[in-house]
Length: 317
Image (tube, rainbow, N blue to C red; front, side, top):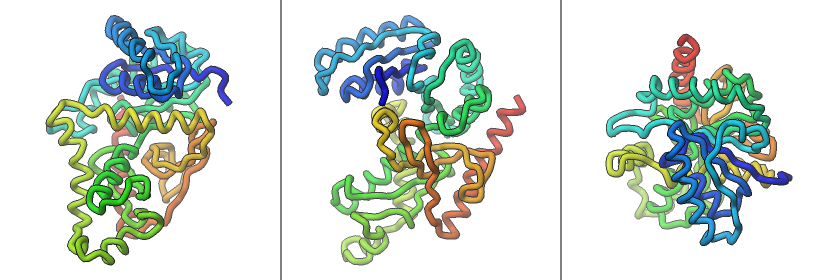
């Protein structure tokens, strides 16, 4: 499928370095290049990560090094993970001004390269930065997407697994909309081994008092707690990025929520939002439209309006 699986990561901080580590441990990349505005940091991280190659769980000798944007000329995947960490009390949208300034710098460098691969964005506010870069580069929608509500969906599965005691791999469902405060759990999509979650809690006396709003709050607050307690999130999002990269390299046709351009799906156009997508060798190959309850559709449109307003603001700068 891919002869040499080359991944370039822009941003060698908490998230970018852990994406690299996940790729090394899994063996899902043959060649990894770290790029950072702080070149010494990229070099230091690359040396440190190269030490991890020797004892990697997969047993493969991944090549990792620091480099420049010219490395994109033959890269398969670009991961954008630049930007500062979110501060306690901040929303991801509060990072907009700083992130746009950094995105402008990245775009200016991207324009010097001849990148023909797939971009996966993690930099926050993720939906907006991803689409801002895509529009600036005039890239096709399918080859430029972001992790979107992947992390929220991970947290949803964790919360339900802890509540019910069922294995996380038996739980299916999606969080939709913004990777941020307006994102939400689409409860109509949540299943445990194919059985609607609402039916499961009704059938178990010990779960009869389950408050869905309280579970939604727990999912939303998870990232805030991580930022408040340790200053960043890094492990979960790195694993999510690995999952998406694996889906591309192996043409898995994985159905997972990513933020991508909507062209009429869910009644929305000219905006990006987290929705279930099919991921394969070409990136986003299909958007899956799952039926939403009226209250879920209302939340989705409200979330899209927030994202759209920030995209309009970015375009006006």
